[in-house]
Image 1 (cartoon, rainbow, N blue to C red):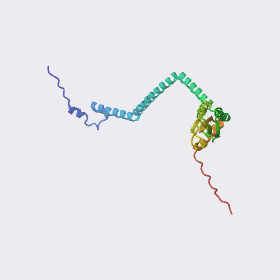
Image 2 (image 1 turned 90 degrees about the vertical axis):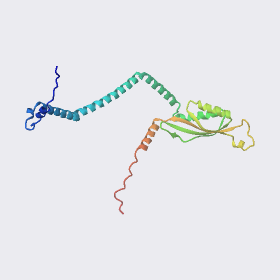
Image 3 (image 1 turned 90 degrees about the horizontal axis):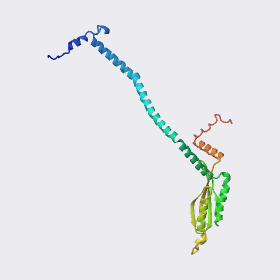
Image 4 (image 1 turned 135 degrees about the vertical axis):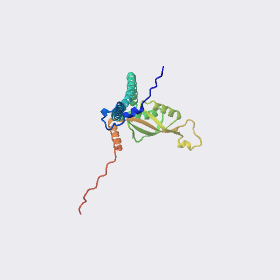
Length: 242
């Protein structure tokens, strides 16, 4: 059986593309019409991609990114919703703890009673106050700090008991820069009497919370400090006539 060996007649194909300028496109042969249609379709597709489809695809990618982000937020909020009772309980515990700490800070009216308690803690241990001098109040953001310079005379064990009593006061009192030394009249002698009186110098710091007026004043000062400096007043346009 003979094999078919089709041959492409390139001369016939080339003949279809001759003399196209003199004829209307509607009268062109099949191959030129198909080529022209292909070019038109490709041009329309290119214009559609450049001016319409590319923007839609970019918008689609952006929306997909937003979807991933929203899904993550949804998962986080679901976890928070599941743990909401636990978080509320923890918040209540924190608020109770903060309330307990606030109760340890006296108000301005209670400061005198607290100073009396510190003094009584020393007197109750048989110590003698040579100095008890409250210093300048230092106002912080939400509380005020009052340093008190103290100097006591007594024995070492009474000093230890005094510091323990101060630590156990219902209000917050801290001791800083504690120095224990021998009195000058004994230091000049040739020997020191065992168990004799000593001197203890320290700075006791106590704290109190600010009242509403003090907090408002503190915020006003902070706002004034952050505000830009005002413009200097301009001199008068005309001077005084002589």
